[in-house]
Length: 137
Picture 1 (spheres, rainbow, N blue to C red):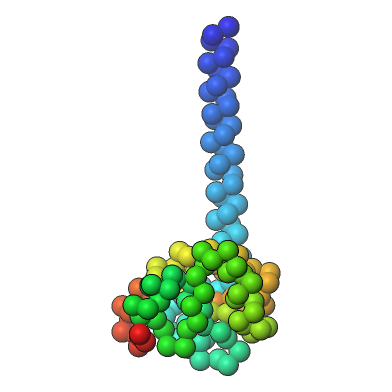
Picture 2: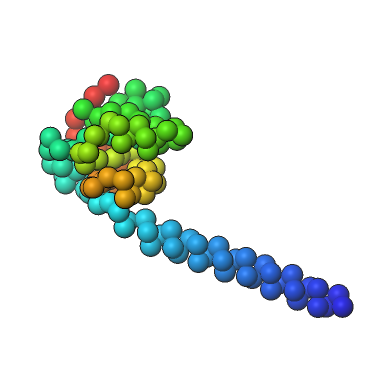
């Protein structure tokens, strides 16, 4: 009896791990489905368009230390993030960035299907500064 319980626990744990892996694979497969990741060069050209609204998804504190000129700060952790972005862009395309590129990808996924075109800066503001691009404070 104890042997069967032990085997059952092992099977349950294996099933749990397998389920988690499947979920992780699905999330990764969807992570780039609804937006375009761009290099600093591409992103710098994209944000020149009058049909693109530049959104910094970092915290207000991070934004105050420096940001891309013309960016609007909407913290992606704000429970009203999606609604605030939709009100701000008013039907235009969105160009998103954060510090390293992680949060902007999450934000882009949250906006997927709600905005026609979403651009995201690969490696975020760190790559922008590393490329020597202008920064506003």
